[in-house]
Image 1 (cartoon, one colour):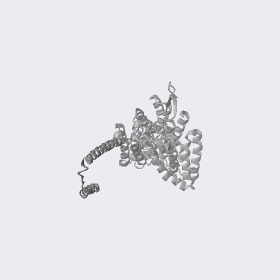
Image 2 (cartoon, helix red, strand yellow):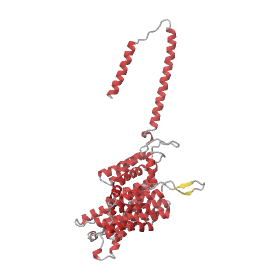
Image 3 (cartoon, rainbow, N blue to C red):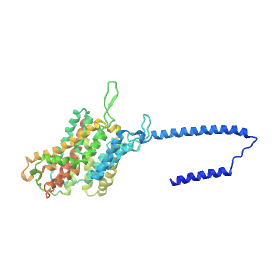
Length: 453
């Protein structure tokens, strides 16, 4: 500001000095002629000033037309608050910060208001061809990012607890009941079968799987029928609402699961002590991902992009001869993909697309799906106890870890168990159904895909 005032002062001083040193000298003989010329010059100058002022006003109107203040709607403001809430929850309460901060910032990106008009593409928004966000969003639409996330998860996961007690895989499978019940609920609410299948996968509490399936079944691009006049009917674009719902419930695992765990178990059941898992050999760890890959993809070939990458990443980890590849998969690569995935998923929640009745229904169905999945794992553990000898009884709490929110569900089970008995550690036992839930949700997604695609 000081520099600006100084500049104005200098220009003014120079103008005054120029007027003093070069005074106007009128010639008496030519006075009348000069007066006529001066009057014409004044009129021309006034016209130029008026033209410049009109041009300035037009420019200011054009500038305001393109600002966010002009194009903001209540929907934009609501979504901006949602994005800020995500960031707040991640920082203040440590709710899945690696996911919620990129998604929260992405929501801010996607809901900065800008000028939109039919036939005009400013290449700003995520749905505008040629924009940077649109190029990044390609990986979501085509399901590129989720398999890369699964590769990183596989390189981080230790399947020892599951290998030592294979029967605990049934708990992971039982927790997937929420997926199929929610699928039926979505059908009852009037969603197309493809849309209902994409919504149902929220019950697995697995964000990458939800994005992968919704990008195949509810991407807003595929034709699902024709109107009477011959116009095509496109499937709804539900990727944004489904992804946000899935990641939201993943972050809220410590809030949603404990009340259900307490409701469905007795004090006596919560105090059950399980036998420690046996030691697993290196050979078993190497064979498991190979056999698991073949068996699961034979059952559900459509799940190959997810399951294949999961077991491939685990083989890189367990083989012992590809440490550099395993380290890259579970650190740098998965971090980069997580950033891009979270940012683009968040940006896809533009107010005009996200704030719909369908989004509210999806969040409601997602909550029910997640609760049913948690209950399904716990109840099935209680059923298994009916057929197991006393020394092999399961603590039903570990059934809640059957959802594939790794390792949050297992950690919730551990903390809940410690509150009941500070000496009863359930983490290693809970990890078995937890990793089985990852496999189970991917297989369930493949089954839905094979039926509905």
